[in-house]
Length: 99
Image (cartoon, rainbow, N blue to C red; front, side, top):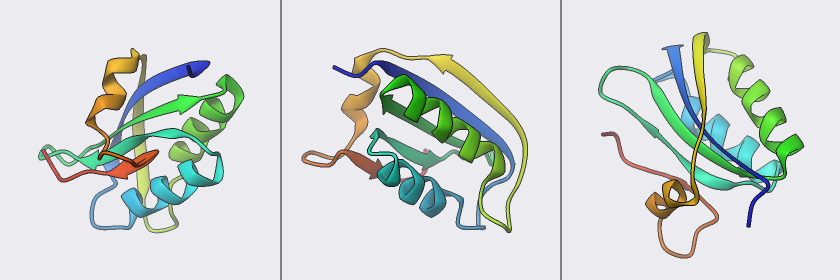
């Protein structure tokens, strides 16, 4: 069981700039579980699960994003373990299709 599970939505110039790949790399480097995906409204949505300190560090990384991104706002909410069920089978962290 993870210490912390957070559901975040990132708004700004976060699509078409390598943001999901950035999140995927960062989440794996923090050894987190979860997923990331683009949303049709132009935002990026993600779920991060793991030790509270690692999840907090991941959310701070999301505020920075890759060089070509511009993050205007992050919505950060508590989430339950059911949110992890969207991952692909057998993956700790998944990049999901746009919804």
